[in-house]
Length: 301
Image 1 (cartoon, rainbow, N blue to C red):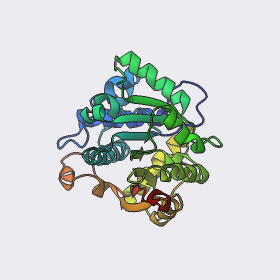
Image 2 (spheres, rainbow, N blue to C red; image 1 turned 120 degrees about the horizontal axis):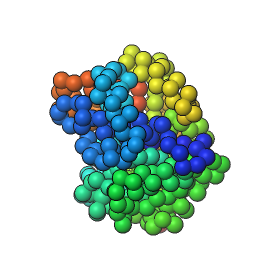
Image 3 (cartoon, rainbow, N blue to C red; image 1 turned 180 degrees about the vertical axis):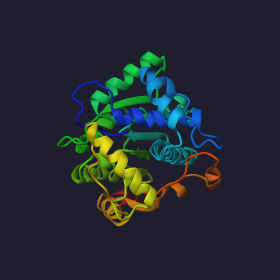
Image 4 (cartoon, one colour; image 1 turned 45 degrees about the horizontal axis):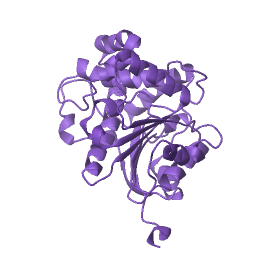
């Protein structure tokens, strides 16, 4: 679910395809317990499904493929679990920054009680809407596509205005999920997007994935990074930014957000989900930053 700022037209994003294939393959090659049941990822892949899922069926235990599934599943599971908790408290707005081929809005019962705002590069959104139509997947009335190029100069600054134009209420809390994106952006774009989130209503929360730099990863995380980063670069979507926990904390605080937690993969889903007999195993590369918008002085007036 990257921002894919370099995409000139409605052509496939390799990283979005790989993430969707990882979620789809979980139900085909992994054993129980299920981490995330994304039943629409496979049909959404359309003509790409056979090729991508064959890799997982044939070589699913390979560390890169198993790692891709682990990463895609745990980050989405944490965000969706957090949304369920917030929905129970009245939050009814969910913003997906760099939505890619995320399917929450089309497969989840809570989506009927939540307005979902999918933010992504305009070309990625055109491509996704074509895939949805080809798969016969209807866009629910409560789902809005918000075309924003976060990497373009001023793009992040236009984020809230674009959300409001799509029906977002900036006076009410929201959950913002930013998964599989920051590594593709520069530091300035990351800071600008975080500042936009930091200006949302108090009680809003952010779940943002980031990648640890070399030296802060475990052995499996370093091996995964060495293989996947080069493939991403060859595909025109290079990893650009790595952050340690302290650096992410500083970015969040500067944006007006209060850091709540930094969760590694093994912490991001219920512990019983790691009692496995398949190839899925947590590793130290990606971290989920969980933060909230605190009550500010202007909100007390």
